Length: 190
Image 1 (cartoon, helix red, strand yellow):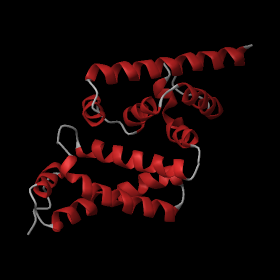
Image 2 (image 1 turned 135 degrees about the horizontal axis):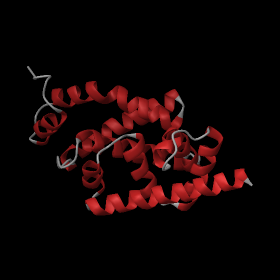
Image 3 (image 1 turned 90 degrees about the vertical axis):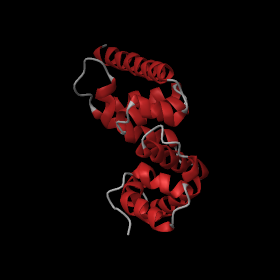
């Protein structure tokens, strides 16, 4: 009988040591709804989201030995979900930038200094302009930090960057957002 109180990291360790499929089943039971919800936020189609969820579960099973335990399992899982969904959007020639913009629109006020609330039409415009100027890696960093609320240490370990590199890249992306926001405000005030 499996101890259902095991942490995700402990379950992964058992799987890496060759334990039976019941450990993977426990992992699936814990995270399948989360994975499905995240997939739906990217593709907005239930059938496609379910297909992506199954693909991610297969990748999770195949990559379980790659998990080093340096970052939280949830951060590692999010990076698999994000990359799989972005790849699917690219295959379908959907606008990756638009999907990320929609996902980040609620967090724009967290990114803009000294502002409590940004009107929705401005936030989407700012984010659309921003996404033209930043790299896919910067987009992933912003999503992980501000939307998914992952800790710097977890982002660092998941992406294989130094802590200072993560902080610097987040700072630069946030500075770009602030500059764009100021430009938008000036245009409106004129």
